[in-house]
Length: 194
Image (cartoon, rainbow, N blue to C red; front, side, top):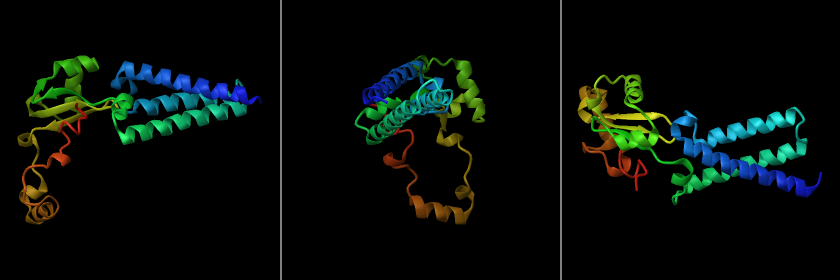
């Protein structure tokens, strides 16, 4: 097989990867379900490539080159997202707040194209009857919705009523009742907000 043809196959795989990534990101987080955009894209492209190889639509070597190119791009994407420097936001997106302090966050709902009924459904899945209990509801980068309750709405923990559990909690968190900023899951940093 001609090396130029193999390079062209790798280049086509790269171009399709980039194009599909843009399309998937434009469609929004909820389009990909509980996958990241990369996971979905890699699964789609690898599945299609394997199909082409199995049915003989492309030569085996061409298919292998395309699969290696796709895997290499996925590997590079994951490292770029890991190192941050804005790549993680550009490649994977950022979480979007849809409820803040028991009230709908209309700008986030518009961004995610979610209506109130969809948000209520997610709250019911979390066992929440009263949205005023919600400190934050966030659409994560994989399309799932995370719900953080206000402290007063949280159920009691064993450490609140059992002395042994209270001592164990103090060993881990100390005597402080507040959560350090680096450990908060609802901080601006944790939400990747600029």
